Image 1 (cartoon, rainbow, N blue to C red):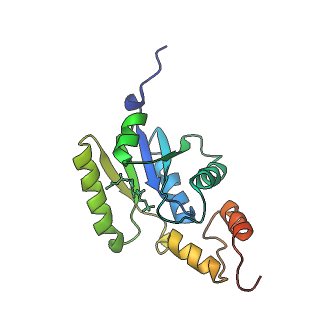
Image 2 (image 1 turned 30 degrees about the vertical axis):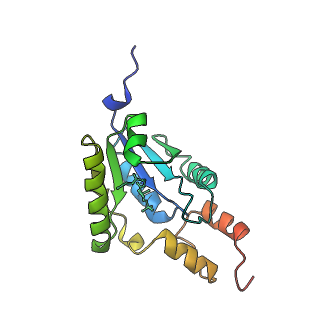
Length: 170
Ligand code: PNS
């Protein structure tokens, strides 16, 4: 039997920096998986942002955390998201909307991506309310200052953060 092309299946891309991935991201991925045939979590290979974890580490962490999600794979990408999507035959971008404050930047990105490639659509999913204030930036800050991240990031992330970062009380 002929294998269906990627475009015949509903492949969505969930792009982000994921430095680190937190439970709000995981919640969005879990919500996206039943909607699409496959969700490709796309880790931006951003050299300029001075990340806590390298791109390879972020991919590895996501692979560990998502090991039990059969319709999900993790890749990294550089350059334009729409070019990466074209390479893998995906036309849908999934993004999380936590609050109204996210809207403006997300709206601009969605329209720019559609301008760059008119075949591309962005769909927005909302995370559980308990994650609506969560961001990678805040998790890093709280961790560095000795705060408790239990229940906010996957255990794989917490373990690696503990290995990586010396905190004031330790
Ligand atoms: O987790 P983030 O940092 O909010 O993710 C932002 C991301 C990776 C989705 C965005 O920066 C992106 O798509 N970068 C790739 C470069 C690109 O295509 N820029 C034009 C998009 S409008």
